[in-house]
Length: 589
Image (cartoon, rainbow, N blue to C red):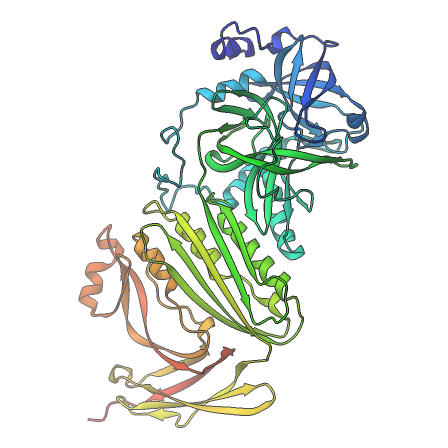
């Protein structure tokens, strides 16, 4: 479809817009953007030319902006969406630039392509957002999920074809400014965001004032600064850009996607620009939100769309760190955007920051981490993890709350909304763990129906070894066999779990685990069980197994090795594992 006909269909003969077919090299006009503060100002532009089919069925207008700030800074991240006018008619949004470009040459996304996105229907009713009152789309296990990894692969692939030895023509990077994040958490989050085309900036903005300043705009305006709010509170994370067009409740911005998330729901706010920082690679605006307003509802190739009457779902995260005397801040409170691809990663960054900033000591420490994730209409999911190490609290990795959020939001069975996350971290400054030194048998052979006596030597820091005697029943079905007994820590032993067939199964599996402060003795038994309809059915006779094998039914169960396990509480974190072999005598006649 030609761009002229697209504009005609979008806004028939509207004198406010100028189609790319009417542009000629050398035409002059202006753009609007916020250089500093909250009010947009003009910068001059000259049309260089039009790049046809820059993207499939989409043109790009090349312009050369002119302004003292831009002559110094070049292409500026955060200017994405700045409206460009020729003859006082809107031609589109400042959106693309060359990395390492010496001239402030930019690419403009034509307004026709952006306006066309307004005609795209939303799957949820007006005013309702995915993940809040309206149902989430249910995604099958085999289907592509809207996860961070999927978005990363898709965005990386989309950007790769324009890579050349002479630089890349890419969307003007969307700066996401974080304040309050620890260095380690920032590094991990920046790595995750980079494939999305989002540039993480540390301390390049703030969380904004608690109340909007009296002079803050009350509505979005063309050229005004906006921000997409990912994290709010003790830690903040905001993706900045510029408004291209606003009419009624609808706002167009960026001129390129934020993360190509499609229909989405993210909180947005009017922003204030503090400074434009010049950089050889890509300059960017330092900004902060000043007034919450509306939500990002569409994240598409030509633009993002905001709805000023919508409210995006968020959830509170509270992290308390107990056991650090004199710390000025041991209670962290943050609000996280409930966006499925990033919610778990953002929550993990909050937890990582709270631990690192509250207790950065390098030394022996034992910890317990209690995660409680509240889900709408469900019982809270609670998981307690124990650990110990010599690296200090930074050794705490992969808190269960992250996995619970990711698995719950990505489940294939039913819509679910996260209502809140509470994490309590208790620290004890001591080397409180035991490790498996050796395992031996009191007798190398036993009779069927008897017990095997294992002697487990546990090492402890600064103390003599501790001997534990564990008795394991030996069934008659083991007669005449040699069996292996494995002794391992609870954290290193994976329980038998069936593939979930409902959301209840998913949540139950997330809470099913062996204690970190226990030893688990595992022994293989003859025969098999199955996992069937979300449940583990052990020790079935062969006739039942034949009926339940997958080849006999599309609803068949998956085979499962029969196991016997004995759990022995130790009272402290246990590390390591060992094995012994036992001979079971024949049954005497």
